[in-house]
Amino acid sequence: MAQTMTAALLFGGLSSEHEVSRVSAGTFADNMPAEKYTVLKIGITKGGRWLYTQASTAQMADGSWETLPDNVPCVVSPSRADHGVILLHADGRAETRRVDVVIPALHGLWGEDGTVQGLLKLAGIPFVGCDVLASAVCMDKAVACALFAQAGIPHCPWMSYTQYQLESDLDGCCETLEFALGYPMFVKPANAGSSVGITKASDRYTLRTAVELALREDSKLVFEAFVSGQEVECAVLGSDPALATQPGEILAAAEFYTYDDKYKDGKSQVVIPARLPEEKLDEVRGLAAKAYTALGCEGLARCDFFVEKSTGNVLINEINTFPGFTAISMYPKLMEHQGLPVPDLIDELIALAMERAARAGEKNHG
Image (cartoon, rainbow, N blue to C red):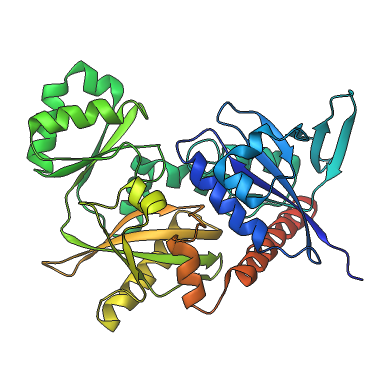
């Protein structure tokens, strides 16, 4: 009988997307058969405690996993000799569990931003998804926009200000933004994850209010000109070459695609492929692969675009390096449409993680 692979599945986390992560991780757990994988579920509470748990996916989703009596505090060991996690039992025993691969099904800060990836890289444990640098730059919208511009990937007009700049001269910043971008404009925390703290400002009053809201999430903000266009998304897989799927389209129920609509309410509709001419679909796919490669992504990511209604111009919005895997999430829907159902997709993501680790080992020891 073939030996199973031990996979540590991380979920929860400290970010505002904690609840979504719990559901995404459940999708992984439900699609990793026991004959192939031994799954170690490790939940991270909003307070930052790491707990090994044998919770069901339903308990993970509803949050009750945190109160299970047999949970065991644990840590990822940075020692490459351990190559895994250490369970800290109540009787004082420290049990080391070797891990073959980690699936960091974490969204937003302190999970999707390079922090956990850095820990896993230090520990020498292969992990699914983008490496440290790509995770960090895709999380920071200001850095990502600068890199898109450098790579020649079209983006809407944008600006960025720090908290110090805004608080030192808010009216001056507002005047500059009004001249450069006009109304309406979007105000976004540079580092906050999916659709969190974002406001559409339509005048000076709502702009000032939007700045106040966004500064609760981050000390650096990004301001973007409003684009009247279709919201389309591509799933990208692999690294060299990157495979971009047919674009899908979001028919948002709200004025723009909010966090609740994206992950909780599920009132928006998804159309695959997007309602665009064939040549425009190909253009979006090409730009998705180009952007993914330009920012150094590997494994998986979802690239989001606007197709401007008045001009047909394709403008990138952002890249998510560990997109949602819920029942209403676009990434797995796009991959399934491409002919890769979730169980096969997970196998492929793990294979890509192992291949990258093998290449790194060859470079380190060559």
